Structure formats: C-alpha cells, structure tokens
Image (cartoon, rainbow, N blue to C red; front, side, top):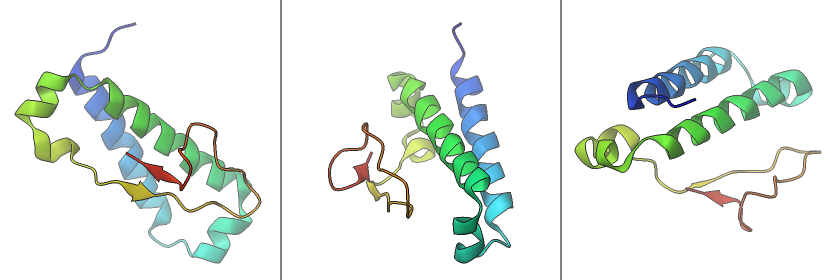
Amino acid sequence: MSFEPREYLQHILVEAEYLLEQSRSLGKAEFLQHETLRRAFVRSLKIIGEAAKRVPDDVRVDHPASLAMPRTRVPPIPGEAIPADVPSGGFVE
C-alpha cells in the first residue's frame, strides 16, 4: 500500500496530538506505573518515526521546518530494555 505524503503527515499529527493530550495531566510516577499507557506511548512514537521516514525527500526539501527534529536522547524506561534499533547511547534521529 502506497500513501501520499499528506497521509504520512496526518499520521504524525494524529499521534502527536494523542501524546500531548494524554500527557497533559499525567505525572511521571503515574506514567511509570501504567504499563499499558507506556506501551501506547512507545507505539505512537514508533508510528511517528516510521511515518517521518517515509515522507519523500522532495517534501522535506520544500518544507524543512515541518520535519525538523533535533537528535534526541531517549531515556530508558525503568524495567524495559532499549530496543535493538536504537543506537548505543540512546540517541535517535
């Protein structure tokens, strides 16, 4: 199945809105206590990452600010292993 760039951007937007809405009134301790919620957040982040990778280069060149993401350190969640696809040091691009 092939998507248009707009559809990938829509996936990113939907997941980002979900993360923001769910984390608005959520404290760190509460977040760490709920495995299902943590897994939902990880899933949303993976969807965002996959969609961002599939946005064509020409769209990135034409709209660099809309996809600009600095290298970010991903802190490990207590009790969970760092996924194999995350380079050592926990930095993702």
